[in-house]
Image (tube, rainbow, N blue to C red):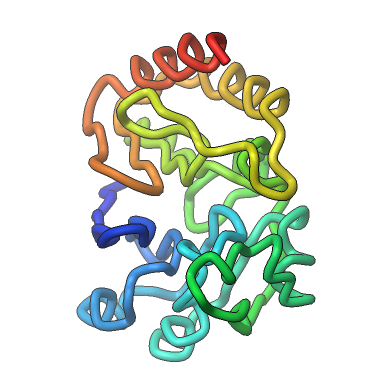
Amino acid sequence: MQVRWIPGEGYWANAYLCGEVLVDAGVTPMQVEAYASEISTIVLTHCHYDHIAHAHHIAYMCDAEVFIHEADEPALTYGRAETTLSLMFGERSPAVPLTGTLEDGDTIGGLKVIHTPGHTPGSICLWDPEGENLISGDTVFADGGVGRTDFPGGSQEELVRSLDRLAAYDVQGLWPGHGMPAKENGFRHIEAARRMIGYY
């Protein structure tokens, strides 16, 4: 499956288009507008504001359904600013029109949901087995870095277990929530993250 990168600017998260699925919605609707007719589903990798800020507007523009892992759903349903981190951006938690929730092992738009808690309780990665692509949200980045665990709901112990789980996949393309993607040998970045987190 082809993964198309829509770069996030500054603190805003990257978005990715995979078939009819848009992953994350921190980018502006203008950045997504050219793909609007192709998008039927939005999957949020976790509940932080920089990944969800424009979900409402993009969903309306694309007439798309919106999904998040069930463990992060309460943060959006109840508008918990301390969990979505919206106050860090000087904003209130946005109204996100959730269609439903996801669980580990679900498949959506040809992508397998891998529950990878640690950054948030409901953080997920999306696995494209055909192309060996992993869209990793803020679980792991393409420089061997990992998502912070000092925010509400974060857990370094769970993040370590999540990285161990990802190491079992033969990841070639690694498409993270922030920064540049790695289009080959993504598994090396995951292994680097496992080694680095052991120092903390």
